[in-house]
Length: 24
Image (tube, rainbow, N blue to C red; front, side, top):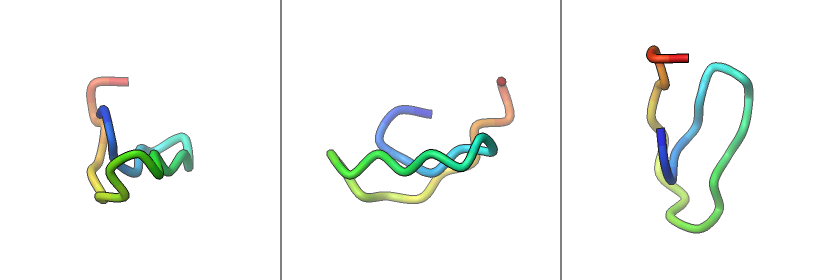
């Protein structure tokens, strides 16, 4: 997901929101 926390352990500090990228 863009601007969120994905299962890869990435945090997008651009938005700082937390989301689960289940597509990847």
